[in-house]
Amino acid sequence: TSSSSSSSSYEDSSTNDLTIYSAAALITADVLGTGILALPHDVKVLGRGLGVLFIVLNLPINLYAGTILCRAADYVEGRMIDEDNNEEGQIWDVNESDDEDEYNDLFLEDESNEAHDNEEEDEEEEEENYKMNLVCNDSEEGGITPTDQKRRLDKRKKKRQKQRRRRDLYEGITASASAAGDSAYSSCADSTNENSMDNELQANPASLSTSPPPSHRHHPHHNSATYDFIGMTSTLFPSTSKTPLRLVLTIYYVNLFLVLGNYILVMSHSVQAVFLNRICLPTAGLIASVLMLFVSQLRTMAKLGRSVSVISLLSLLIVVILCLVSIHSADDNDSTDDNDDQGALFYNQKPLQQGTITTTTMTPIVKKEEEESSFQSMLRQLSALSSICFAIGSQKLLLNIRHEMRVRTEAAPQGLGLSLLVFGLAYIAISLAAGDGELFLILVCAYIYTYIYPCVRVFVSLC
Image 1 (spheres, rainbow, N blue to C red):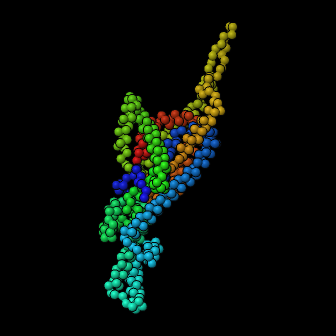
Image 2: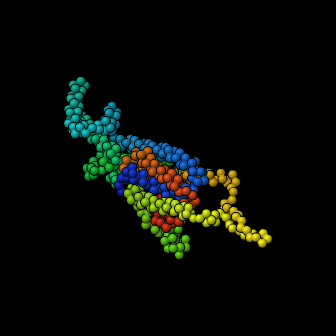
Image 3: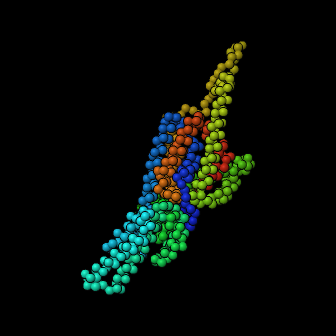
């Protein structure tokens, strides 16, 4: 059995009801916020044509990678269901080999509503046929006692009840893979006899349509096997090999430490700007940390997807609009200046004495950036490429979001594809409209420090 993921909560009974659109909004809010800051400047470094082309090429690659990740999660969950079904059969002691496979598959084959409505009549007819077979066997084999006949009939009846329960549970799983029934199944996990499960199902029949897979019953950690990269790694690789798990743990927590440190630093600047820079940065960091404790209490992606992701995207939209308006307003003002005023930006007037005649010559101002060597230019281009890859990488929270979707199989390619389409078009549009990438970067930094968006970003990353 696999080990549990360290970042999941088994006691959270909130409904996992993320739809495709909620999941896409969460992915977009996470990716767009980290990538929009420096993307126009990266496109400028690479060249507008090459930069936009590299963005477009990264979109299908990320869709393919995310789809593979979700398919692996589907495989793990299917294996967990098979594993617990095998243990379930051992607990219930169903050991008749002749017709075991036939009756175990009844809940998969009988899917029509008419078959469900006539189920009791079919069972009664089948019981009569079974009794007739017993009578025939009685005459052929030289007699069977009434006690043996009753024992066989009771055993057959119990088997049918078990199969009916399995079918109902399976239909509930296929209807919805949410975690609303975690509490119901946690109580079932302690009961290993038939009567306790019957009582649980009778007490809460509604849980059949919203329950998670039956793998939660005997092994509660199966609920976290696909929650994040840690659970996936510990499940896919054998427990005898600790190297893959240790490698993933190292990368996971180092990245978490660096990303959260960056978010807290940005949030500290935001708090400092609220107080008009009258407090020092460490004090602002302490205030930001206290605020972070309050806003990080929403611990599920389902809660984040309902409102916080929308707030994050709207805040980012306001910042981007302000920056673009400022850029184009500056361009309009420059176009109305006189040629002499425009020339003053690039030239200094220096009087030179030549005898009795004073003349004015125009000498170019020294550029802020000296001519770069080919090696430095290559480093800047490689940095821009890696920055674009990070801006489009959409798998950081994909497993967490998928785990809390109403239908987990819709995480990819549906939800992920919709998100890639939205922020891909946004990246391209902003890269083309931003003009000078450096000016856009400066304006975004100025606006973003005075907005609540950094608080929302820390909130999303922690939860």
